[in-house]
Image 1 (cartoon, rainbow, N blue to C red):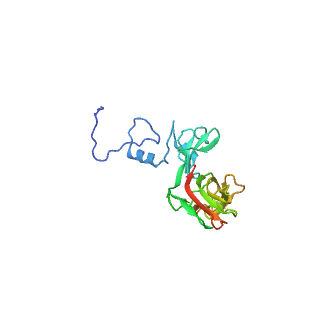
Image 2: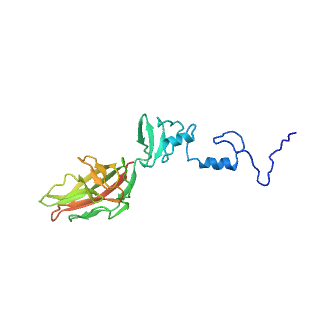
Image 3: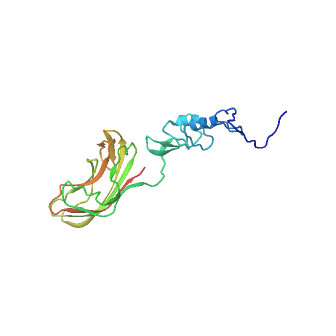
Length: 246
């Protein structure tokens, strides 16, 4: 004889059969079923996600689609911790997803005047940091440095304003400095893309002719350095912006 009870109140430690993983019916869910479900690597699915698809993406990625096996396909979105980007598959090409236009790392809030060779003219007054943390530069990472100011130079050849990263010259210089000049505006926009990472990593200055070797496993300061300046030369930086573009 069977009895139907309306919302029975159990006492003690009631037990029940544990449903198979992935069960989506109205079957009773035991504590064991819940704990087993929580033990599966996190996966966010659009459509019908499953553990097999998460495995196909790899341990460092979280898939946002349920149709990736046996490989990545059009429309897949995932977090790639190696690239340090949110990635998307567009056609047959994996590309970073642009969440915002850029991430501002540093903004100059004052102005800096210098007239001595070997002097760095950045970092005296600003919000943020001009120092890239260790491991920040990974293959594909691109940064942009935007600068402007005014300079004055005597009759002799003016000095050189060049960008350094981690104390290494990038061979990117402020163009157009001329002798016999007084309070002449100058500007520079420089982009750098990391090609390889490691103790002998490389970055490529856009517009440059060769890669620059740089240790990306340590922190690297971005600087604007004076060199070959003559007596009476001076330069003022009144705007500086450092951004990570991806």
